[in-house]
Amino acid sequence: MKLIIDDACYAYDEIFSQFGKVITMAGRDINAKSVKDCDVLIVRSRTQVNQALLEGSSIKFVGSTVAGLDHVDQDYLKNNDIEFFSAQGCNSMAVAEFVISTIINLAEKHKFNYQQKTLGIIGVGNVGSRLAAKADLLGIKTLLNDPIRQHNENLGNFVDLDIALSADIVTFHTPLTFDGQYPSYKLLNQANFHHINEQTILFNAARGGVIDEKIWEKTQTLENVIDCWENEPNINQNLQKTAYLASPHIAGHSVDAKFMGSFMVYEALCEFFGEKQQENIKNLINPGVLMLKSDNLLDSLNEIYDFKQDTIAIKNIENFEIYRRNYPIRYEWPHYRSKTPLPIV
View 1 (tube, helix red, strand yellow):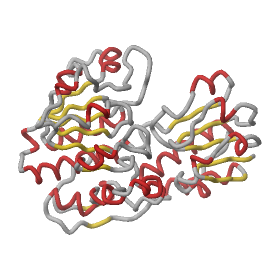
View 2 (view 1 turned 90 degrees about the vertical axis):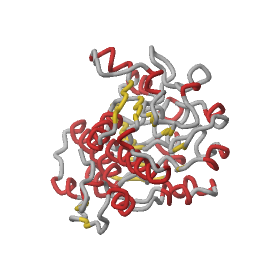
View 3 (view 1 turned 90 degrees about the horizontal axis):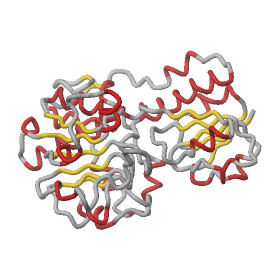
View 4 (view 1 turned 180 degrees about the vertical axis):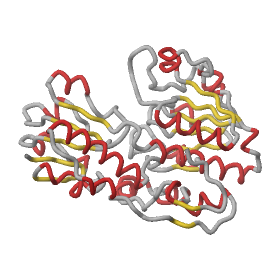
């Protein structure tokens, strides 16, 4: 059996070599020729998985080690009996930590009490739910918006989009969708951007295209935090220059998230081929207990990881993809022992 794997997938050799010959290459370089005689394709977000890539190939299984789905034509896979698995939720902790850490830093910069702010969370799936739980631990009032969940689950504590957009801090955590009853493409647009004002802190840690960037760059806010962009890596330089954080789609790039993405695909692959899981793979991440020296929340979070370095790294946007592929080691908060309680949930 032959597997072709994006070389940015975590521990690809240790995790997937039991299935056969592993061939790796950069996700952007995977093409129809390279997959033609392969049985398994494992990707991250940089490979467009569709008819143009797979037609005439031997691919039986496609695994995506990231949470996003907009790079995969699921209808084509289903119609051609190709098994598909996506590691939904693998990076939810990492992205929630990114948002919380940034809010704590912005509270210090602007001298506000974050417990007196409202946090509008638009998209309350894996990431949004995790973020809401952390915010609750910190005493931040959340305004939750997710019309699909609200419709399906009749959730009385959810609010409509306009109310969520009127929060002090607004953060997006939706997938990128173009059709259906609630498409998310340009969800924040000309019709509702007036809810965003000069005191709003606005995050996009979801997908590029969820916010209309042409309007965003002309809108005065208190701060912009942008991890996901339209046309990556050719990002909007006007927004990049003015953002508090302008990072290269790395909010979910913790070591834990990368491992979990690969491991979840590994589990699905074992089930698909009837293979027994190797027990040692569960323990590939084991940094031990990491001690923090700081005695307050702000300094503890920055001691764990200072996200400002990610903004500095791509001031020259030519470094966008290089930095993503060579991202620093970043462990999630549960690995750390802290003198001050961390919002771990």
